Structures are given as C-alpha cells and as structure tokens.
Image 1 (cartoon, rainbow, N blue to C red):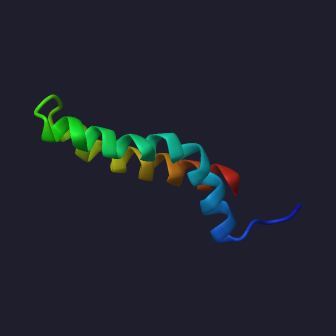
Image 2: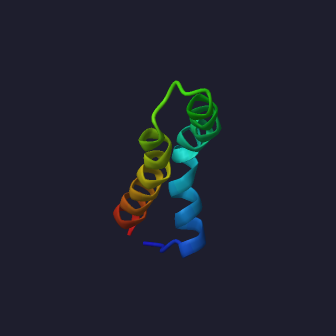
Length: 60
C-alpha cells in the first residue's frame, strides 16, 4: 500500500471542492446586492475546510 504525501492528499481532497469554491464569488455578488445574508457567504469557506479535512482523514 502506498502512502500519499500530504500535498497530494490535500490536492486530491480539494479537487471535488472546486465547484463549492467557485460559488464564493457568486455568493459575494449576491450579498453585495442584498439578496443573500452574510452568514451564507461566511459559511462556504467553513464548509470547504470541513469537507477537505474529512476527505484527507478518510484517505489515510
């Protein structure tokens, strides 16, 4: 069994999160327009961090 380097594991975990990261500018625009509350914009990076952490831990 081969072990992935931490850098490879992080990249592999972030690739599925890319669509979520792309929503951040859209959410920012909606917040600026007053169509979305700030809490939604602030929760996106937290959700990405949690998902990345879980995927890295599952990979080992």
